[in-house]
Each structure stands twice: as C-alpha cells, then as structure tokens.
Length: 593
Image (tube, rainbow, N blue to C red; front, side, top):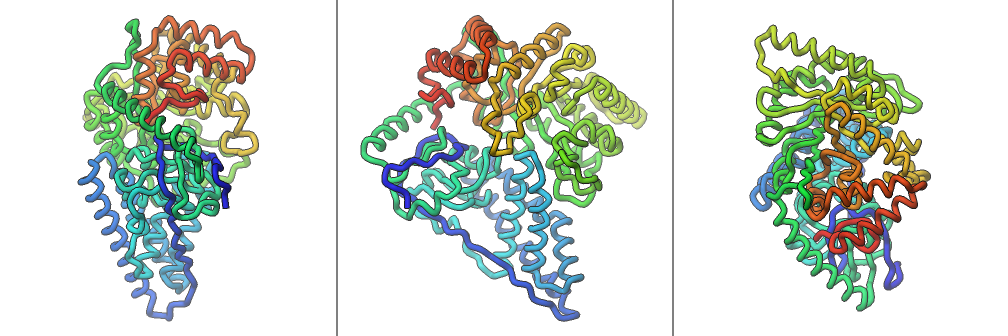
C-alpha cells in the first residue's frame, strides 16, 4: 500500500484537477472455457452468438442515444465506431466460422477472434492504431458478457463524487461517465492517443493514464488529488497539499471561462499576424467538437480507419460519401485529407504483405500507395468527387523523393481525366500537398516546393527519423526532443524553401498542439497549426497575447543554442516570463480546467 503523501506519475491526458475519494473499479473477467458442440448443434450456437451481438448493439445504441441527449452529438462518434466494429464481417463471420469448423462454443470462438485481432495490432508501431486493439477487446468483452447473460454495466456501480481507478477503462465505459458524477479517473494502462483518453478530453473529465499499478496501491475511499495537466496523482495528501490544489483548481476555473470567450475570435497576434488554427480528426463525428473549440478548418483528416477491420477494400462510393459528409459538416471551412498511411507496420488485412524487419521504414504510406495503385486510385476518385462539395485539399504522406510526388500527381491526373470522361463533377483546382515527415523531404524542400501547393510538417515522424529515435521504445523515448536544434533547423529550412516558392507551411504533429511551442513556431514562420480540438483554445490564447516581432526574436535566439536541453530551458523560461498566467511553473503546459 502506498505511503501517505505519496505522488504517482502517469500521463496526463485530460486537463483539470480532481480532489476526492478513490473508487476502485474491479474488472470483470470473462475467461471463456472451451467445450465441444455436438454435430448438428453448431447452427444454434451461431444463432446464440448472433443474438449476443444484437444485444450488444442494442446496448451501444441505447448509450449513444443517452449520450447524444445529455451531452450532444459531438460525443457519440466513438460509440458509432464501436457499432461499426460490431457489425464488421471479419469479426462476425470469423466467429461463426470457428463455431462451425471447430465445433466450439461461442464464448471460446469470440475469445479466439479477439486474440487474433490483438496479435495483429500489437505489432503496429503507430501508437494510435495500436490502441485500436483496446476497442476490439471492449467489444469482445461486451459480447462475452451478453453470452453469459450478465446484464449489469460496471459504470452503474460508481457512486457520485469519486475519482475512479481502474486497471483499464473501456471507451464505452468512459463514454457513460458524467462530469457531475465522476470527478476524474486514473488507470493503470493506456496512452495519450487511446480512445479512452480522447473521450475523457471530449467530456472534459480530468484523467491520468499509464500509472501501471495504481489500482494495487490505492484502496477504496483513500483521499486523492488527480492533476490531469501534469499526470500526477497524490495519494492521501496532507492538508497543505490539498489547500494548494484547491487554490489551483479555482484558478483553472477562471482560466477556463477566459478560454471560452476566445471561441469566435481569430488566432491573431497583437500586431496583426493571422495564424491558421485547425484540427486533426479521423471521423466526421468529431466535427461538432472541432467547431465548438473554434477550429478554422480540418488540417489533418486521417483516412486509415476506413480500411481497418474489414474483409474487403472500401469502394470509391464509400470514400466519396465519407469525404462529402466531412466537407458538408465543416463548410465553409476547408479540410485537408491525407491519403492512406497504411502498409508496413500498419494493419491492412486485405493485402498480403511480407513481414518486414523494420516496418516503420518499410513499404508504407506513399510507397505503399504507389505500389497498390488500384486502391490509391479508388481513394483519389472518392476525394476528387467529394471536392465538388466544399473546399478540400489532398496531401501525400512520407514523401522522401520528388519522383514519388510526381508519380502520385500523375496518378491523380489519370483519375481526374477518368472522372471528366464520366462527366462526374470535381474541383479542377484541387490543391496537392506534401507531408514533410522525413529528413530527406526537409532537405529537398526547395525541390518539392516547386511541385507542391502546400507543405504540412508531420512532427511525430520527422522528429523520430531525424533523431533516429523509436518513440514507442521505452528505453530511448527520453531522447525524443522536439526542440532539438536539428529539428528546429529542419523546420526553419522547410519554411524558408516553401515561402521562397510562394506556398504555405502547416504543422500537424503533436508539437503543434503544445502551447509551450507556439511562440517559437510563429517565429519560425509556420503559417498554420493543426492539433486535437481541446488544445485549440490554449494555443489561441497564446497567439492572441503575442507579437510577431517577439516570436521572431525568440526563434532567432533559440537557433543560436547548441543542445536540446539548452533550447528547452530557454523556451521554458521565456514562455513562463511572457505568459505567467498560461504556463505552469514547470513550463510544460497551459493550465486548463
């Protein structure tokens, strides 16, 4: 058991402070045992499985209705995604096939299918996609619960006014929580991009994940302080610590009120420089939240989700409907669609690929698109058709060589010509961009800028490749330094090359959404930043309190420093000095309730 006054540190994924008693939510394990189904009985077993799936879908639809009614439609997209997974033929047909061919009970077949999904996702390097395994396990547990006839929901056991602790929280559990009932939650597992984290931010419930063993170290009723900004959880804190956090919470509340006032205001500096502030999304259902937080548009629409967990490739019509829906919801704002970044370590079940030794550097993104031309053309046709319904841009991921951009543009022209022959309307002026996320693309930015309409710097991969750091490797993750001088020089050169050729530069990685970086990025000449929706008001507040001249001065001074540590300390000190109400003492994060 943890000593009084102990602090545990995890990953703060939803800002705010919660003070209250702990409630440890025990996980219900539905471990299935195998038994043989007699010949002739498998059809009935398949029907039993289908009935459990139908019951699970009915429960999710009921949660969805309740959530939409209580909190608005912007919070239901996750449940929509789970409903889609539940209807997925790969899952349903796979379980039915196991029951018939192996003559096993439905519980065993479901468990085997979930294990296969888990194994497929575990090898993925991309943290965002890897965490999709958690969604499948959530769905599988729900089906198992219905097969067992267990109807209760874990969340219904939670009393009011507690901080929930759990080994893991299914996203559907998180979606049922209410801020007025649950003060916050902390879980052993999870990462910054997990769906549970996304839902927590959407519901504005303070949350910390990745605490490893907090459920083993804290008992029901233990007093806690949870700080979703810093990732700290104070266990049985003393009176002085409680008083300190009470004061901090009041301050955050006032800050939150200030941020809401900025929603309709432009991201403009005191001396008139207008920065674009846009949002990163993967589902159109996120758009209401994006608009609520004042985004000027969609800077990055990830399209991988449409390919996952299915037995066939999406059709042109599916692409078209999806992107058209996106545009219709975001109009008159613009949206930037990234063509699929799949292949290599990213799961794509329809295309058999040889296992690669280093898939993050293998056949993926634009390389994969240029090899699987039919799939690429299908997506481009859907994008082009959707472009008739609003302002849309397309960009290609992981370009490292100008010939890749040329080939991609040639294929786009072929698709354009085909649509024209078919008399299908599209935007003939569709802008084509390049994601700058390899050091090679950064170095030849002047070459690429002659043949692209815009750049978007994907910092997650650019930093990883520039510093030779696998950011999901716990042994070297500490070396992942966005403010490394090499990274800053790359960004500066990309901006210089782009502007010399008259094209704008956006940034859409995690670096873009950190307020501590905002002034520096303005000073480096970035034209727009794209981030998760909740970060937008915090970044906008910094922008509106800044001057372009100061930003340039800061960037110039940072560019003279020699090490990542020196730059970090300098930027932290300067930001704390310039924005004492926005940057916490440790310089890491803007305060937000």
